[in-house]
Image (cartoon, rainbow, N blue to C red; front, side, top):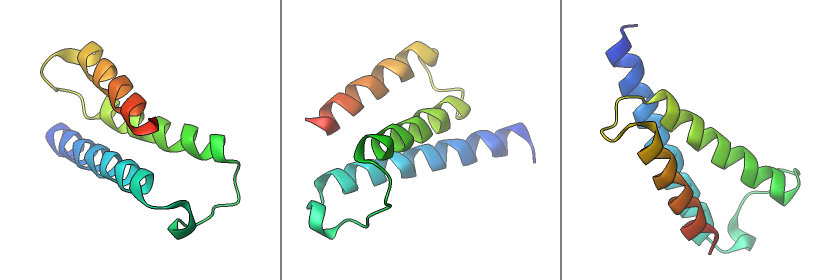
Length: 80
């Protein structure tokens, strides 16, 4: 796989995870599937996976600091 394909795949997965986090945050708790894991662990896992995917999707303009800042804002808004 070429580097451009890896980058595109990572960006696709990152945006899919961001959408998943948003949808799961908006769905009433009774309609979500239970994993059996503690609630805080679920949050840490999904946000870590999303951050990692955006990290592997290198090449966004603004660099890693802008992406990190945007993800922190996103996580804060979602948690509110």
